[in-house]
Length: 593
Image (tube, rainbow, N blue to C red; front, side, top):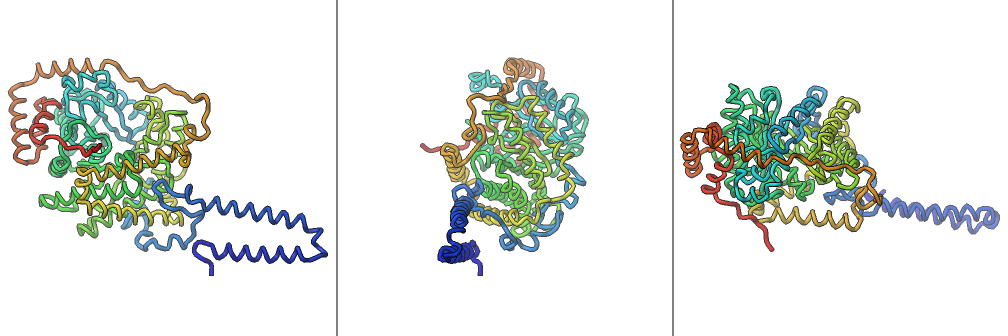
């Protein structure tokens, strides 16, 4: 009898109320005594109608991805959840969690991004964080040199020498990486040695592995992850010189094969939806694009016929997502990501290996959510995003520094990011139960809607030629840009509220903090190290290694053994970049005016 949207019940209630009021007003015995009651009822009715209108306001009742929200949810809303989706944590399709014991058996890895200045500075910060309880570490390279594969004496770097070391340590050789890793046991910690940008990944991995080999370690003793992410490289932080996306796919597949043969405990690449989301993709677009990217890699590896699809999928199954300030939508997104990965592998590639079907998720909380006004408020934002990540069942987590809108994280901000995670783990009791929000009518309904939209967006990408084609054409950039503009307009017109920015603003900032200033000698010291390296190394061995690398690129062989040999011979970052530029050329950036 009651309409799905409740309109029938509201109409019936209104009719009954009017009938009762008429009866009261036409009864002479009580009219004078109840006049005040009637007036009160009228005021209350008007107030209730206003509340209903406010609750039903469509403009402000959507997720940040634009999914319509109801005022409340019942079992009727979650009935579309399939029986297999309700399976227990650790059971397919893993919506409720990849592992049955959750954080009872294995807490998430505290995994903060670290790096600035000189290699020694970065090493000191990593050791500081490990001392505070970080359980893995991420090395950040200087973006100006690393992303472009330039040495510090490249003209483009020299023209901006003040920026060198601003976003990470300058590492042009394995000797530099060894300085970062001084007094750090590579067999003890799960590491991400850098290489977020695709063309930089082979060098970053080879430098880390060379340090290990020079210490007498076998690569099989090491655990960690590469990244080599297409979203950062070709969507979020497009560099002046970058290898074409199709070449990047070939190199990523080389890394996958090399790790399968020589570093079985290493996650070869990590598809990072974070970089797509912080560029503008919404929650379901992030999901759809991540799995479209995975399809490109899986299909290419199937063509190579060296590794089984299940082995490839397990290597690809350590992915990176962003969690922002839409608390429930991002919890739903992480749950849906696990289910979609399971369903994609099972249905498209006929994979049944449970290790491959279980998606392992790393989250970095949204740096874009951090504000430069009243930056101490960002501690609250970081905590909420970390809590959302925890409730979504992540395997590792990095919390953005509260000063991220001002600078790279200060020591204090890094310390706070670690402590936020430790407090959530040890003091809230939430780690005692896997998927504690599972069964919420709202969450389950939202999960269903997100999944539907994510599959639709993935199909849209495939209809445009596939993930790489949408990068080459600029189609994906347009989708991200449209969302960025919409979010900025919402901030300007006030429909999107950010405390301290466009609502509850103050004339002065009582929580002002100074950004981290870093060091001023990174450029000069890097130049001195480069001069010494070139003087001390075996020039003949360098020439041979570069020649073999160039031939491997030209002949389409797996480049990783040659990259490793070159870095072992003290070939520099810029020299490898010269080979890549000569052999592969530059990507044609789809920017149109």
